[in-house]
Length: 315
Picture (cartoon, rainbow, N blue to C red):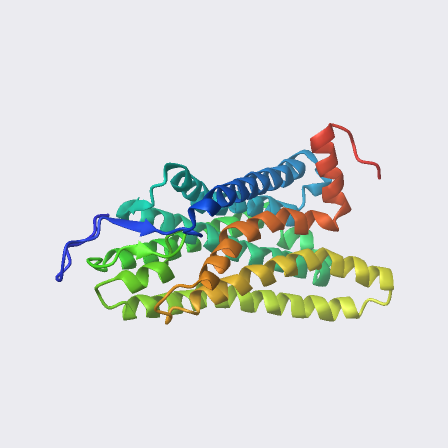
């Protein structure tokens, strides 16, 4: 996709990403921290994926979705962090117009799939706790694959819609982005065209892409909570809630940072708060997910021990 010629000036062919800090002395520290975070995130998520593949205990629908989520987390951080690290090494801040839109597309694609997978995981917990007798038929391997395929299809449609929509805007003036990756809130203020329709589209599609899954997650866990409270055994309640706690923590972090990021489109100047939220979306979330899902899960911990040492965990 090529930028169109602007009516008031030369069409922008590249954007300048200022990055996280502008102080030269801090750049090496930023590089080391983000390189460490990237390697830790990729290593952690691939370890979770390997544990799920090699441990028969983890061949269940919940861990099937968790394995897919681990792949997405690796993709999300890979879309943004390596390019930022390369710019720090080369001391070049320019990003071609096409590369910027490509990054935007893949970021929205992966985040969109993430959103729907979290919903599928909530539905899985609902069936396991509230409909245990029909769980195996309602959450068969075919159903799992269909849920993942639909997630990718919906996310692809969403990402393509926003990418095509923003490619119709004219960028003929400022091209400096006070951020470390390209996204809609960063690009809208730079457009010479009216972004009103694009912002309305973002809110409308965002309501469907985020609002509907969030409503389904809340509904699922409302039923789960009601079912768990009917369990007389304290140990039974504790076990049921423990299987949902990790997922609820990830959902809260994911939606909290996402809402803050996209509900501030009226702001004309990006601040350090926006960069902090961007770090949460692209780095912290993918890095925390393996920790959250393995911290209080003995099955995952045992499988990780087997992957790293080649020994079977004690039961």
